[in-house]
Image (cartoon, rainbow, N blue to C red):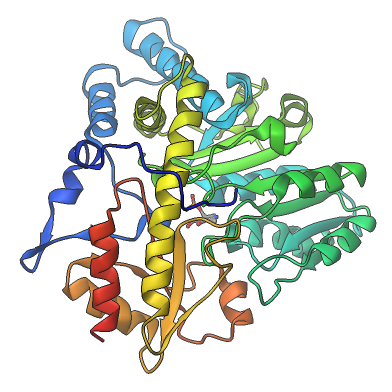
Length: 409
Ligand SMILES: Cc1ncc(COP(=O)(O)O)c(C=O)c1O
């Protein structure tokens, strides 16, 4: 995705913002501008209403012959269908779990059971450690060799190194679709194609990508992909896509009496039913912002709009921040494939102190390494980064407040 700045936004931002009660919050006499979306977005009323309705009126465990249990089964099936549309997958390829990190550890443990000492896995320096540690654990526990694709100064992956790693015929490539630290969007379709040619599976971390661009697992050509609903206006629940055949093959740790059929076999214990219902409501919320015949069409339309809107905000933020003395911006520039998530540092100030200063003016940004620890190490930034991310509810005025807040340091 290359963000262009020309397309006008079609979302009515005032109406859109009215769905989010959190945007009414005031801090020290001023409205709050939330730039912490890459850490977790705010939630529209419809999502909370769906969760409340579930807990008040349908709450039960699954698979029993009485109405609330049957309703729970139906709601989970509807959520698989919603996330099937969200990911471009079939409902039978959608599993739920606590969050992306837990799902990835679980999947890695399962896949590792059929791999042998000396088998290889490829990871990248650009990834959040949720897509590093689960594979590193196999290195320690099962003697799997981990090959790492380096990060270039441009904030992009070293593609030549990726190709060389894949020439070593690994079992799996673990790659992020978008970096939560730098905003870089990586060509996961190209990477998965190379991995397939090398006989490797591909696992994609789409946690930072999914709020900004339409996920399409078929186009990506991946075997597994994970994301988290709390990054795209939903509650805290993780979603795992698995190609049906791959999900059926993996020796996933499971309880003997639990279903052995995909996708249920990928899930552990009693799920977060209300979170799943809320996650599906977040998908429907996003779909309601677009037009088209099917929910997938409406989602595609919404993401095209968010892409255009994000590009305009990104350009404004990038240009405004880069004009301030002492500010350094990181990651690919606004004309490269990236999300509207802007990391920066300010000379003479720690990332934490910049975030505190901005918070005092009601501008909420995150600071630190965001668990993309290797990225921040490679940049040589002991104090980490300040990260300002745009979400669907971000306005030009909020971006201007952010820029003015940094300029006033
Ligand atoms: C890119 C990326 N991957 C993985 C994760 C971990 O996701 P979760 O909190 O759902 O485990 C995050 C969380 O910030 C992230 O930004």
